[in-house]
Length: 210
Image (tube, rainbow, N blue to C red; front, side, top):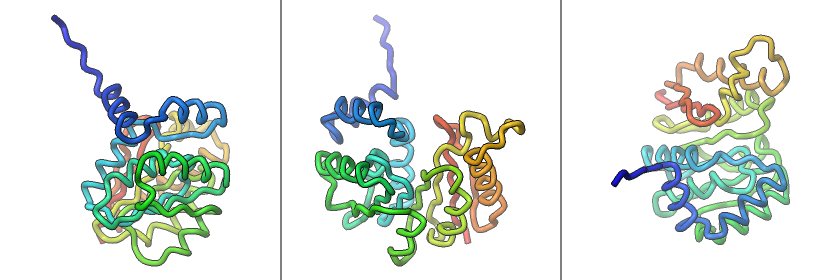
């Protein structure tokens, strides 16, 4: 008898069963409202990164409906906190519901507004800063957040390959140029040892070394 093992399917099924029991409702809402999420493969990767560094404080810049927020929250050490941030109050309201269903409300603080401003309202360093804001703002995120990660912590950014457009010199829209600039800034910063992981749309992981 031949067995077929699909790790991505298993990951999704485990996530659905133990984290969000209303997954179908969530997926329908995401598609209907055109709200992007990182997906189960990147979600699992983010969870793993948080456990690698024994994360206790995570700041998300651009949290949408809380999908990645929940992956992070379930990885935290006791007493840890994920700071959710999004500029859309409707996203935040939906995220609050999903977070409650996931049973991790005590580990998440919801902040509504511009993430570039909200991060200034939370003092101290973070074990992880996760960047997933509007892509033209990526350079501004670098300038605002790169110094907020502790030594030994991670600066993580989604969509850094941008469906390959970052490698196409003929593409010069604001979002693509923003990601290109961010990638150059992060890789030229000797405080970080950085790698782009070719997962989904590309995840940049910068380990702060000094």
